[in-house]
Length: 315
Image (cartoon, rainbow, N blue to C red):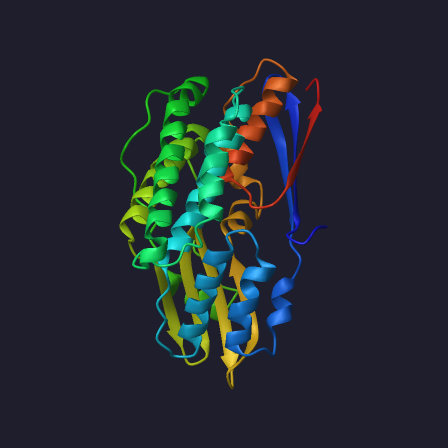
């Protein structure tokens, strides 16, 4: 297993359908490293251990630890957070979705975005020295969004869908719903929400990348919420994959328990979410079925490497 874990997805192809889906998600227990550490040390360590969506991971940790310690959540510069979300969205829309649908990647557009983001420093837009650079980052973001939308009609055509819908709202944050479960894991966890179809997941990502670009350009606050007190805290924020939740428990200012619920952990806790995306669909051969399964996995967007295994059966 690597530092972020591994995901294996298996299925059986028979009579034009995929059946017997299996999901095996393994994660290293890195949160054990937080035990006994002061809150400030954990906040600094989180983005190192959780390198994917590191800015969002840090913000969720800050919120959870502030809630547990009955403290006010310190403000954060929204620019790096929006840029991080945009990076993940543009990576998927420009590099991953096209080949999954038999189309060429938009590598040049992504390279322009990555270069602009990497050279900006992404400090506050009020810094006159960096103001022009940040405007350049916003311009590169919009160029990437435009390229994604130019690909959208072709991608949605492969998926058998019409033009993209312009309406989109980011998911709501409800950390208080997670607090009882954090205190008592024998309770049922709040229900996970996933896309209803592969095409719906693609449409949602198109809407999200536009909203993220608007937010980066305007300097809008990045969504974050917390709940808790008396040593227990839950913090939530957004990632490109959905709502990220951290839970912290403090005693005498030190962490005695910690947990992370990432979208990947919730979508791939079992095969239910994946099965919902392939149930009822038919494919003419094994290769087409494998591509369909790959598209379904991409729709749920795991934040770690994955492998697919499709076996063939006559019955």
